Image (cartoon, rainbow, N blue to C red; front, side, top):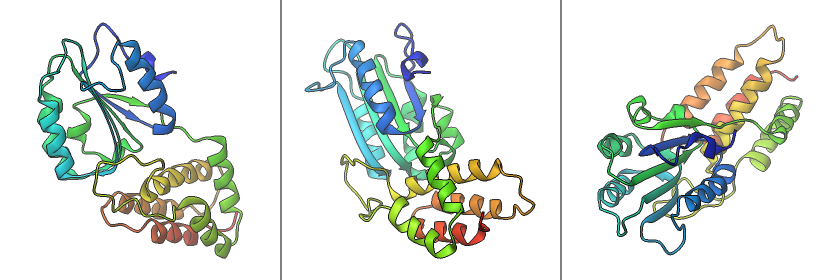
Length: 236
């Protein structure tokens, strides 16, 4: 199903939370916004922000911008691509998304809805598009067939980025997901592939669960957590 099939032009919700990959979702979403007669370029009533870690300062700025009236008589649109929200940021934004402002609409794309507060998610019309590609499944199958040393090399070379985007403080466009986001995606695919196998020993699922929980915490090391998972899984 296409993203646009979730929207009703005549009754547009004030806030949408879309779980999935921004590289796939964003182009279709921008096309849809253009169909609403909202220009996505050189338009003061359109705001597109891409940020890895959405913190308190960003939340305060967005709350201020979101509460301002549109410059035109048309719609005011915010599109946010965010890998992670801090708990404080979510709490700051609760009222903004709870009380709709006429002709103001928010579209937030994020890779992991489960990492967000339930009270925050409840303010949105939730759309889930997350799925594992054939390439991701192929990589996971290759990973679990490797000896431990090769798995460690695979993590460094194929999953994690060499540049740390997690420390980014400014509202900047980033072309790739953070290490945490990439690691979470890999663990989701790994869990899917392993769950389809008939295995007598499944204690490693606990390690995958723990790694996923720690990855959602600020300051966590994606490399160390993935390595702990690599050690826990038997050679398959």
